[in-house]
Length: 231
Image (tube, rainbow, N blue to C red; front, top):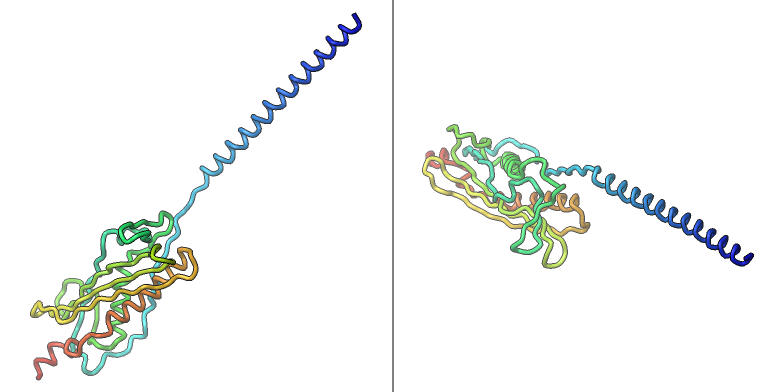
């Protein structure tokens, strides 16, 4: 009889202990579930804002035009492929595949930046009597039309690079004849793999490309139609 009572007490204790352990497990499970939900909610509530970049192409000093500079020039806004006008900084993982950074974007249209940089450098060259943006009004001897062909990060063929390609032509407005044309493609290496470094190298590479693009403008364009008539 005494033994049976002990057994009953022992089983009762086990039952109470098991109940407490089960309750503790349920409590711990609830706590872990709440913590997991809290982490998810915090993650969902965190808003990521895009970062904006610009092409920094400082203007060179603007000297007076040469005594032989009689031509006047208007510069149209550069054209570009559709993918370069969408705002996102472009990258290529293969020659056929183009991607865009979702949170790294251009603050202004790269075409506008390139057009302004070309105008600044042509003014600084002193080769023309004046250089202005094209507005459709008469007054210019020539018009320069250009195209931004490439402005992208290259993520294939070993390492990370940037590629810039631009082209331009000058047309005599009186005759409709193309008197000068040129195209340039430049590649720059990136030492540090982040978007800020990519944009910095795009700036340097674009400066080189514009300088090479505008270097060989022929003398007969610079002297212009006025000088030709005098001869």
